[in-house]
Length: 429
Image (tube, rainbow, N blue to C red; front, side, top):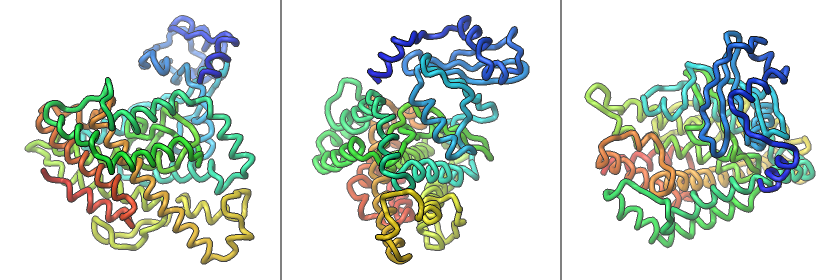
């Protein structure tokens, strides 16, 4: 990002305020048209934190949009992912590289942030299908399974300058939780000993070192880079993935794990939101089913098998990862050349090995994301909104112990159903 910042300075980057934003919109036909050309009575609401991005919602009586600045990599990733999965990525109307500015779709109510819906106990029946669709398409089509080595390396090079965001992730996910760090925090004093146990767990440190190396070194696909439940907006029939400002080429399992790990956090938080009117037991079952379905829809493995939730059949979605691989196996992808993998049985074995590795990577990264949300700098509203600190700590402790066990034993799991059973085994003090 240092190079990008230097380029912005050379080309006259300037942050916009409300007045200059209106002038910019009037001078930009692509944005003015989205507001119906009615620009004399705009409603502008600043919703950014002024740190990573300047963010404005702009409304007229004829249209709406969102304006973001300091968002070059976010704009690039949105455009790329939108091209691959238009159903679940908002449209970018305008991108000004010199100003590092994007104008994009305002995801209107009744869409809400998924995390808030999970806290409220709202079921989203299409969430697993939609997220499997998004992850399968964005990961497969930016990998060497689909692209030539030359094109893939061009993509990797484009995102190398997002190094500051990557280094931030390295610090807060893979380093700080495992040492005494200035900004670490936990629900004290209840979890003080639990946080200390993480810092003293040698086996855990060896496993997290392996994941950190993979995060840094393995440019497998163009990732969202921060695919938690706060980066997804939903209604019962719509799912939109937003805010890929951490986008980079990295291990696929990091995106998949972020999503699944945050759902597991939501699961363990439910007891803290239960009351006499709703014990949340049925909702917890729905979360587990969503976790299970998300992986099965994505991978196409585990179809028609006995799951942790009982027997059920997962539809064979044509957008799933393995189906995309089969469809494009004779294309430009150079990871598995057809003259080498020249029989259906050999390709099937290669796919099984690949998906097993991806499954274990996803479990590891998901667990790391869970741990950092309990003993690191940035926590999640799922737990933070539980007012009773003792009750909150009880929920967090179960999630933390579950995450540590999955991270250390991830290679022992053969199916997502086994993971579900494992999660349920920690659902008590």
